[in-house]
Amino acid sequence: MDNDKYLAAVLDSQNLPEDSTELEQLRAHRAEVDALLKREFGKAHIRYGGSKAKGTLIRDAYDLDIICYFDQDDADAGKTLKDIFGHVQAVLAKQYVVQPKTSSLRLRGKDTSTLGQDFHIDVVPGRYVDASNGDCFIYQNSGEKERLKTNLDVHIQHVKDSGVLDAIRLLKLWKVRRSLRIKQFAFDLLVIKLLKEKKSASLAAQLRHVWQELWDAAGPLPVEDPANPSGNDLSKVLDAATWSELASAARNTLDSIEWFGWEQVYGPIAKISAEDRTERLRAAAATVVTPTKAWCSNA
Amino acid sequence: MKKPWHRANPSLLAKLEEDLRGPYPDLRVVVENECVHIRGSFPIFSDGLALDRYQIDVSIPNDFPDAVPTLREIGGRVPWDSNRHVNPNGQACGEACPVVPEEWLLNPKRDSILSFLNGPVRDFFLAQSLVEAGDPWPFSWRAHGFDGLYQAYGELLGTTDRACIRRYLEYLSKERIKGHWECPCGSGSKLRNCHLNEVRALQSKIPTNVAKQALQRLGQGQA
Image (cartoon, rainbow over all chains, first blue to last red; front, side, top):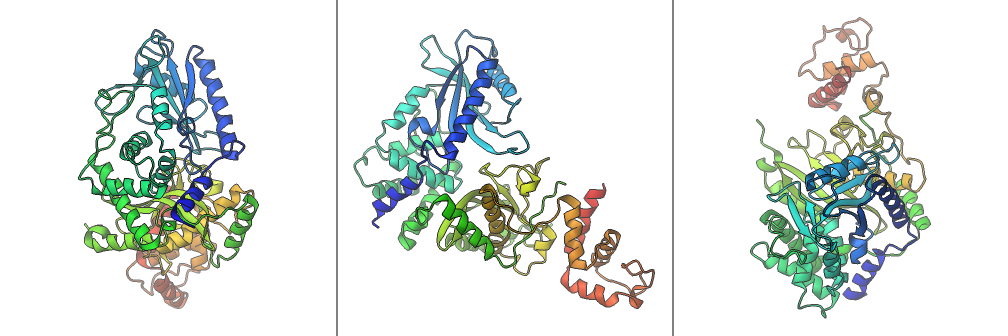
């Protein structure tokens, strides 16, 4: 199999069909969150973003952003952005374990059977800048500025129209599998920038180009937020430490391709059914000669 | 204070990266706050195929290999449920417990992180995938909490009597054992007239630091 066919197979293996368990669960959780937010904040504008909306969803990391924006003059959820963030967090905490991130609230399971399980949903509270309901201010609970102007539609469109969605998905998979800490939003922008002149190149060439650029650059390359080019300083997100981590992983990946080939980067691909997979797992368990005995310190 | 292993011998860090590269190309070595972590996607390979993957963080203690690495499933896939052998409460929320620590410390291969990944970590996630598929946990396991610890130490020491287990561990945690001490078996006889040979044999199997750690862990339950 040539490199591009292999990469196409990797992409194919990362597709999540609409009737997949993962997406069905995601939709069920979305409906619950939606109902909770609408019950508590009747006038809030609820919309969806995240990788599904952008077309960059992968099986290894699928997520949904639930945008909960309030009108400019709506003070029901709070007067300040901080109040809104805190109020939405408190409401969600009734049903979920809520993990606050810089501007969003990650939801995890709260009942016994799902405690701590990631629901792949981020709720992003915010307030529209004006009555046009386009630009929005969101709260930032870390960094110098407490608020950030952004625009969901501009972000989604920027990625969707980039012409390099396949490369973005494969590089996201590369990033996720290595637990690289760069924020996905900034990483998408970086990849789009690096591939601006390489849209017609083969997928393998695009990926190699991105890794080579990451490795060659002396320090973080500046990227602009298309929704707020002058106001959103992404240099904090793409700082020297984050860049060094990316550069080092990029170098290792280029070495791996050189020494072992592409399969070392994304692994071998074979389509197996869920039943076959379970059978193989059972067979693998049966070959463990002296399994370690798991133990839980909590009685 | 003893230098962390990766400071005492920086070449070990490079060797760790090199060791991981072949079998686990998605796992990265990260040093954070003076502590070494292995982070990334852990595959369950069988016949060359990755049957499943889990996002993990393995924190390697500074006194490794005399202490056990800490495993976390950071992808949020496994619920924090003691029936899945993940700690549900407290600071250790989400901490996976693939093995009783002192049992691992007696493993002759404990000084290799690859052994930890290929053994307890793989067994743990293989079992998680099967449980997700609707199967029971495929291996035997330890009872939760202190019951499981007494089970494990009891098997090592050949007794189920908890007081006896503690006495044995106390003796084994001493640098020297004296024949005139009371025998830990509870007979009331002097050690030299009772189980001295057995205790000496256990000494060669269970180092003092492991016995001390076991006692400390059991002591936490009495606090």
